[in-house]
Amino acid sequence: MTVHALSHWDLMAAGLLIILLGATSIWLELGLQRQLFVAALRTAGQLLLVGFVLSALFATTNPLWVVLVGTLMLLIAAREVVHRQTSRLAYKPTFATAFVALLLSCASVLVLTLLVFIGNQPWYAPRYAIPIFGMLLGNAMTGVALALNTLMQNVLTRTREIEQRLMLGESRQLAVVDIQRASIRNAMIPTINAMATAGVVSLPGMMTGQILAGTPPLEAVKYQILIMFTITASTGFAIMLALRVSTRALFDERQRLRMDRLHRDART
Image 1: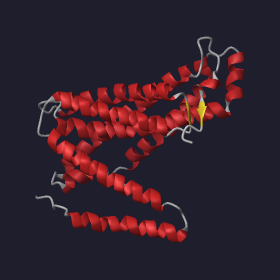
Image 2: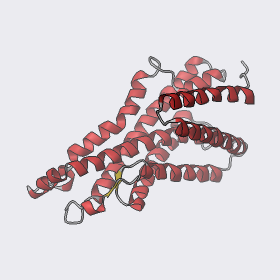
Image 3: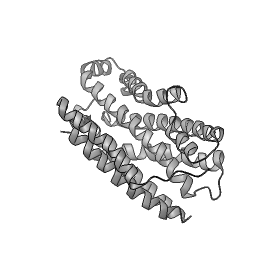
Image 4: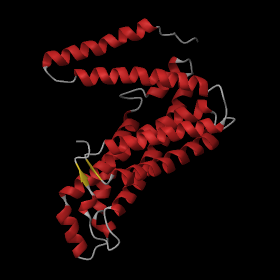
C-alpha cells in the first residue's frame, strides 16, 4: 500500500478551515481570530522545519545528534512548563525542577522502551528515539505544568491551614500531602482519560498515522498500546518528582512555609 502524497494545495485548502473558523470568531465577537491565525502559522512553520531536520537526522545514526536534539526538546519543554504557571517559584528553580523531572522520567522510560520493548538496532536509531521521546515529553510536560500550577494555587488559598498544621507539629510533607495528592490526580486526568477512551471515543494519532502509512491495524494497535503505557508511566513519575522537589522548595530548613518564594500571576 502506497501513501497518498499531499500537495501544497491540499494543505492550503485545509487552512481555509482555520480562516473560516477565524471569520466565525469575528462574527461572534469571540476575539479568538488572532490566536487561531498565529497558532496555525506556528504549526505550519514549526512542523515544516521539524520535517527538514528529521529528514537529515534520520539519515545518520550518530547518537550525539540524538542527544543534542533530545536536550533541545527538554529545554523547550521545561521553559513551557514555567510559562504555563499562574503562580510559581522563581524562574530558575521552577525551570530546573521541570527539566530534571522530565529528564529523569522521560529519558529512563525511553531507554527502557528502546532497549527492552522494541529492541531495534541500533537501539538509539533517530527514527524511533526522537518521535517516541517527543510523545513522552509532550504528555509529561502537560502533566507537570498542571501539577505545579495546582500545587501553587492550593498553597495560596490554603496558606493558613498549612501553617496551622505546622504549628500542631506536623512535618512539611504531611502538612501538604492532601494538596500533593489533589495535584497528582488533577494532572493525571488527561492521560488517564486518553487511555480509557482510546479506540472507543477516539483513534490515537500514532495508530492512525501508522494505519494511513500502510501498517497492518493489529501491529499499529500493539505499538499504540506500548506508547500509551509508557506515556502514562513517564507522565506520572515526572509529576511526582516535580511535586516532591517543588514542595521542599516552599519550606525553609526549619520547615516554615515561605510564601515570599512564591511569585503570583507569573504570566502577566
